[in-house]
Length: 104
Image (cartoon, rainbow, N blue to C red; front, side, top):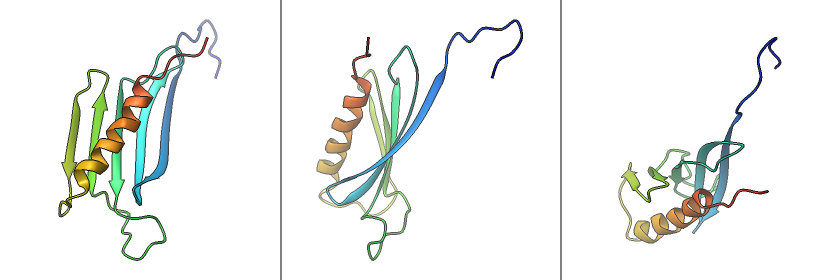
């Protein structure tokens, strides 16, 4: 949108991505400006995959990772033994988003 006598100095991009990690649906949310990479990635983990028996669409684990490497997580249902490995894999994906090199 153009506004008379104004110049765009920055644009914000918001993205939501959904994928499968170890048979669980993972949703990532982050924002960034065209000149910078994301500062934080928020995530939600849903047990199973959409269409699977027992898939509720309710997050089992949520949290965020910031550029300082501070990972915060919250479990919303009964914790499973495999959750630690799952969180580590989500952490790796989030770290990859936060360390993306800007294109020239």
